[in-house]
Image (cartoon, rainbow, N blue to C red; front, top):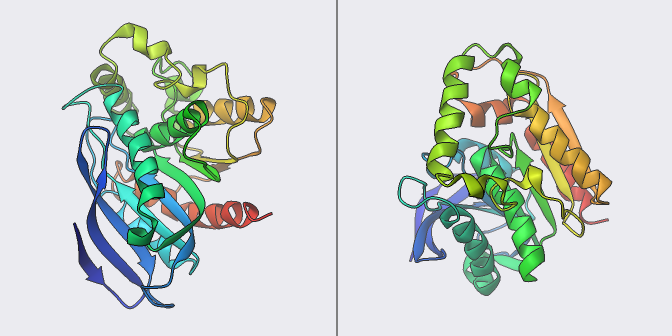
Length: 279
C-alpha cells in the first residue's frame, strides 16, 4: 500500500506500509522532487523516531526528515514506526527495526532506491534502535549497512552517566529524569534485559566490525555522556566514528528534541558523514 501524502515543490512525501517482525507497520517515504520522483537514489536512510520507546510517531520528526531529503538528490529517507513498549516491551521494537531494514532490501523498486547504500538512523530511543540494528545486522549477517547515525541516543538504561545525573542545567531536568526512568521501566520490565547488548548497546563488549558511525549530542543534552562513551568504545573497537557535541539551541518547546537536532546543524554533520561513505 502506498499513497502520496504531499507533493510540495521540493519534497515528495508518501505514506506506505513496511514489513515489521510481526506484521505491517506504517511508514513515510521522503524524496527530493527536483530530479523526478521516478529516478532511483543510491542512498537510503531508514530513520526511527524518538519517544522513549513508549510514545512517538511518524509526525514527530517530519520537518527534520523533509530537510534531510531536500538536502541531496541522491538520497531517499524512510521513516518507520515500530512496536511501542506500551503494546509489547523489549525486544519487539528492535526486532521490528531489523525487520524493516530487511524489508527495504527486498523492496528497492518501491522505494526508488538502487540498493547501493543503506544507512540506519534515529533520534533518542530511535537512535538506540539504530545502534542495535547495526549490531543485529552484523550478528545475523544481513542486511549490509553502509553507516549508522545516532542523534542524542538513549544507550544506558542505568541512567548512570554524569550528564544524566547533572543534566547539564537542563531547565526541565526533574521531569526529564523521571520520564527517562519511566521509559526504561516500560521498555525493559525485566531487570535482566537491561544488560542485554540489544537493549543497552553501551554495555556491549562486542563492537568490532560495525558500520561507520556518526554520533551527535548537544551541550544541554542529558544523554551526551553516554553518546560520547559509546563513540569512544566504537573507536577503540576500530569502527570509523565521528562524535560531535553541538552547542545548545534555544527551544520554544522544552520537549522539542527533533527541532533541537535540526537547529544545532545536525544536517550539515550528516551531509559530511554521508559524503564520506563514498570514500
